[in-house]
Image (cartoon, rainbow, N blue to C red; front, side, top):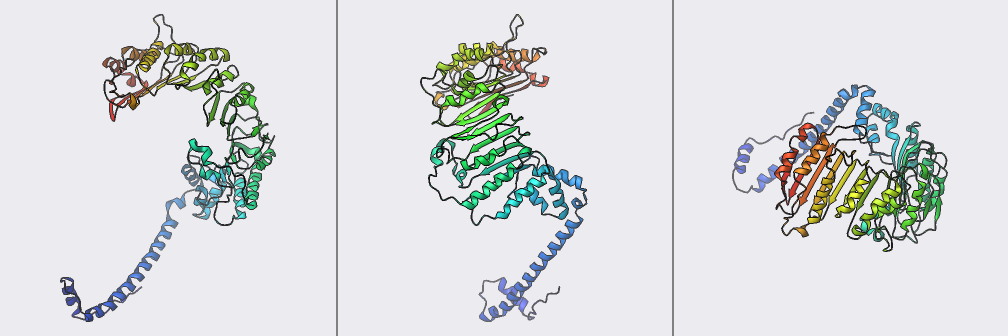
Length: 535
């Protein structure tokens, strides 16, 4: 490529330089003589830029051809592709920006590797069609789902499917304002095309129900439930189920029986969300973990009754939107009501936060509930418990406890006495008796509230020599089938001010060397914005 420069008069460079170095305005004749040169220079610059872009494209193409990655064998490329998706994020089958689609656009070889990698296509995300989307819904997008299911090549499937025809999930912003944020569409113009396509999506997934292993469904129409019922009796591989109705329909329909998952021999973990008036039938006798959501218009007892049908249940989470229970209830705390209703021996983990409404009327019932249910509790989380005389009987009834977590969110003198009493209870007795012999994790958390800062000068006497000795002795004791040494200790204290909360020297001295010996221990004491002690 040859570019001809504009022929300048001999006197022009000198005159041009003189004008540049002065503040004189150019004459009309000088302006007229400069304009053609400027236009010609701009034209040449555009030609050069275009040529540079073409040359850069040629360079990039050549580098791509001779790139070392093109010389890698398919096995190495496959490992690289799988590493890119190391977090096992599900593949959005309707998105061309998903990892396998992006990789497949590079070249024919990469596309072949992606299509033959069943690991990509056995973990899929299916976002249904919605009336809110701009433009017509392309029917040929269903072929993308069919293709993904075919490329999974008979492997067990993990599916995340959300069919939200009316875009109701888009208006979920704050859980606390859920009923205001989710209006009930009493009358809506249903887009039959979108609805039909979403039901076809569901039918395609149901055809592969014999390969389901871990599935999550969110649907927005009761009329879709019979489609899922067609999978009944075919889910021999299903182990984990998450199912829910998308809000907006939960109060607009009568009770509906849903038994699609009643026969699933390997199903162990279930989460039911926003079911409204859907009555679900599940293989309760084999379930190990259950999580349910309930509403303030539902009866809490209705959710607790089925617990007697779950003899193998180890964890139960009842999450609701209205936690205020009847004042006539003899056991006010949700977690303890569950324990009260459970099958003997079912629970291994209990988390209870005792607020002002429940603290003095509930905790003393816990020992009796443990005795009645014969639960072998392994993990105990207690928040804002002040009455140590009520807690010690609980600890005495949990000899198999592995983890004890004590939290105080409103620090005052009673809280200090309480934690000191717990630490004292954990000491090894003079006669060699070991309380909670299988305890391996201990967490003590204190978070002071600004309203108590007047200034914050309450003592923390549990941070003294006896507590340090308790930790050291339980770390050093010999293990065995019936005794386990303390292996993890977390002590976290954060209060608004920095007065009088540094640990006692005898406490610090007592812990010296434990980290070097192998104990996984951390102690953080924060006053205001300053870290006062860190181990």
